[in-house]
Length: 210
Image 1 (cartoon, rainbow, N blue to C red):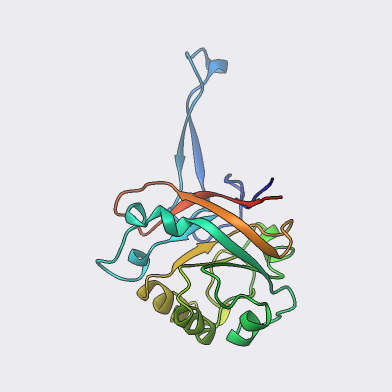
Image 2: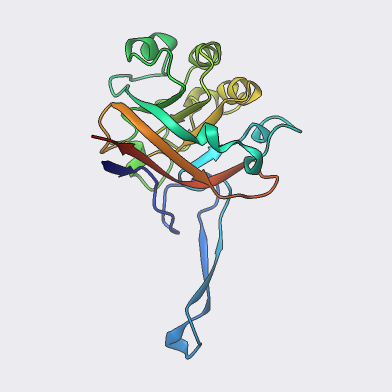
């Protein structure tokens, strides 16, 4: 089998939304302490992470209660690198993802905005119509290769987030798909178990079996 690690490395200079991660050295061997110990300050939406329904819906499922059966299983990486604006339902249909339970959208973000250290003025995101199509298809998880699955045109109304999370569809963001060919994989996505949290950073891999 072949394993693709699609997790972004977490460090103080990384691409971010809001504050960057901060690292404090608590103890160090170099200073004569018994061991090396660090303290990290970072948000639940840092790096590759999963948005739980509680992110946009009060009282909805938090990240620690999301079933692992949704986060582990067959997934399709859809080649949407030719999309230059928002991803529409027609783009998803053309990519052949109808009937898939978990979909990861590989876009031009992977080779462009995702590689930068500052947020881009625009990126490929999901249109409200595409979000509704995914809900109608009974998709359980949708992922994208940028800070947010939301269109850069809608980061005030957050239409896709409201629709998807309101319907219980999990959102995986900041998946690094640059080296992953389109196709069928086994997804293993394990968010940190932050009790009652709206999201959590997650070590995420795709497995290609012979």
